[in-house]
Length: 178
Image (cartoon, rainbow, N blue to C red; front, side, top):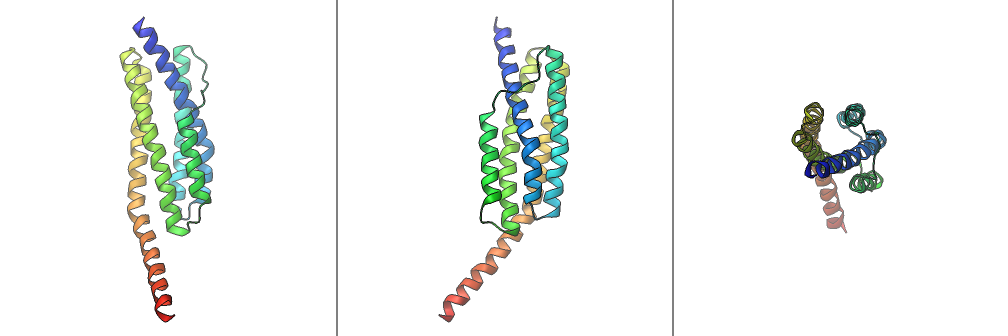
């Protein structure tokens, strides 16, 4: 009985992350278009291709379980995607906009890391070794994406700060002239 309960939870969590990934397949191209940095744009485009593979892997896991690959509404990802859209539509320009996009993307990655770590552990406990391996592979890719975003942020955030320093200096100069 306990295994059935854990199995049901496992399938429910897989459905949640399946919907989350399908939401990202739609959101990542928008984020790529909003990025001003070529490196960030390229990173979003690469991660979109990778996310499509994540969806395919989840479909493979569902098939092995004899379950339909369908998602339940992932409210967590819906909120994260909505926050990302707010960042894209915000009044940020250039590097500051890119810094905001990275912030939104890293929140998504951390959510996915938590989700994949959980379902991978459930798969292991349920003796679903092939699924656990596929989920572990995706988990590692999500961690690598987070690391890439951190590397991009280290340069972009400094550039964003530099453009703010110039703005701040210009504001002080204008105030001093008045």
